[in-house]
Length: 210
Image (cartoon, rainbow, N blue to C red):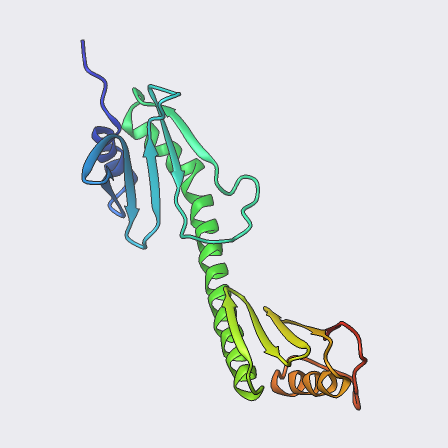
């Protein structure tokens, strides 16, 4: 009676059938190499994860891996291919090539583009927050991803400027009107993408949304 191959043992023949651009690699838990999992790494950096789940013995699950991201995945963009482990490696590779790799390649590129755009936005927000903070005496800055906050403690009163991507919001608590007008003017002049009407003087309210 033949002993069934483990996922680690199956990875190499399947990778050979997929072609030379995919390299099989063992999966590890700490320093221990796992029999029930493996990884395929493409020459361009894409990865596929293979595993035999404890609740589905005898079947191989293959899914595409993605970088850490907040990309809003849609239905069908992270599907898994499920095959019997006793199938011929050539047939398994054919399923992966037809049903998984094309979608994963396209979505992987969208995720990378999304991450690039997010990184650029984070840099822009950080730069804008630093610029505002440097121009407003006593201001403090906190940056959280694509969102930043600039605080001014007026004693009495408080000014909070929120930068969320291309959106700027102001919250003024017990701030004198002259301060409110000055902050609206400062934000609209220091951040070129924020537009206010010609001659805008502001209103004395608890919040501004520019």
